[in-house]
Length: 351
Ligand code: CP
Image 1 (cartoon, rainbow, N blue to C red):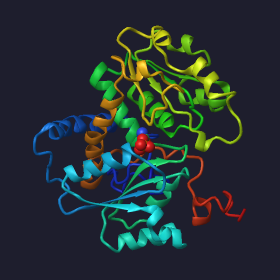
Image 2 (cartoon, helix red, strand yellow):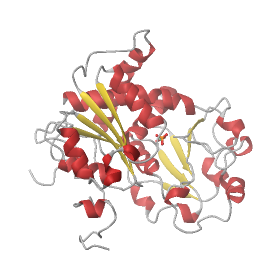
Image 3 (cartoon, rainbow, N blue to C red):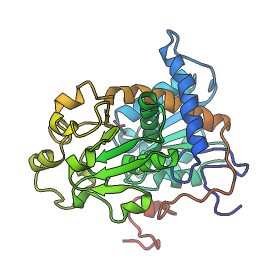
Image 4 (cartoon, rainbow, N blue to C red):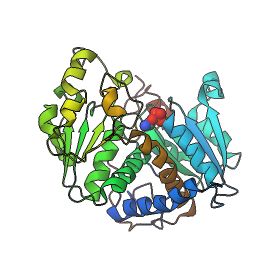
């Protein structure tokens, strides 16, 4: 069947986990429910189940990571898988080996799953299109495009605190433009049926036509925070910014930094989230990051159970959906190595 979402095999079973866009609500709920059962495992004295015994998971991170890489490693080990962490800066890619050659060599070692982080949007899709049929790919963050496991651990944290999604007003604050996390969160929140998603930030950091994703845009933080149940703060992604988009970090903190004074505009039982890494005094004040409304470190803890759930569902093929779903909404999946590395444009012409 042409044009099916490449996350599913031809029988409609979840094979890769690349983006939340296009996934059904029931699948997201199944992931959250499965993660609930795994969170019991992580609380036991012997934190292991044999579900992925004999499987080999490769962490392939082309960008820095603290939380995602380590929680994927812990999740795989708690499922009894063998784990390889490829240090890309010390691998043969630095000697000119192409990404596909690296992948084919890892495939030759009979690996079962690649967990991939890359600075180019579409990298995980590209890899998923080129691996052997028995291999699964999980997107651990690709450029500005998607960070679907982060969004799912965020949904898990929200559900733990708020139980139902339907009545929630959620504010995502800061650098929406460069945030793969925000994109995945918006897809997850709207699919799970929250009442309202607000994105708040300066005009320079809000993508054009973001309203088409079903969100409301605010440029005034106090106005946007009024009566929200959940606040998700985002880091300024300087590494992805081209040109000066802000007057200064000091000015940004004055207007968009979350302080106790601004927090008071939200509901009294609001929770404050952040995917990390946090920049204290830039997007969030320490008194809020470390305060009673913060669930930032809980998010990290829940990342293990949620990643266990996704890895086990993908490798066991236990999650399935009808084949009629729409294809991933990414504008362009790179088709060649040159496009992936930025050496060719979308037409394949060398630039
Ligand atoms: N939230 C997140 O992706 O953090 P890391 O970059 O440390 O993995």
